[in-house]
Image (cartoon, rainbow, N blue to C red; front, top):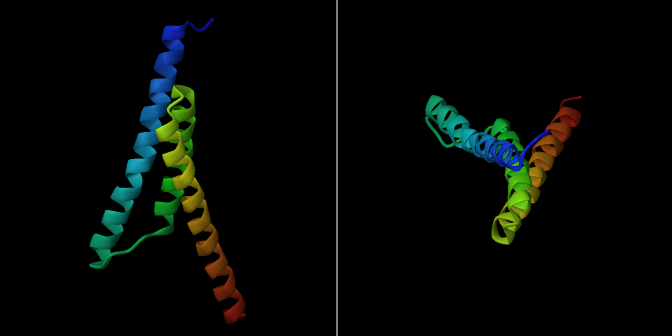
Length: 98
């Protein structure tokens, strides 16, 4: 049976995992931009943003922090919307080529 201390440790790990995923987006973007010698936002940036945002949102809900919840909820919507636009553009490009 899980004790409250164990549950707190699990949620702390969830929070750190979300922060790691969220931080990876900056590293991915930095590496890609360095390789191309210009500012580039690869699609993985948005996937890491969305996954990190969702995990951090779960953590914020667990902590019952309304400021953190609103920030992550709003951000998660934006990341999902950007992924939608990326996939929409790919679909349009594929139709133009066909």
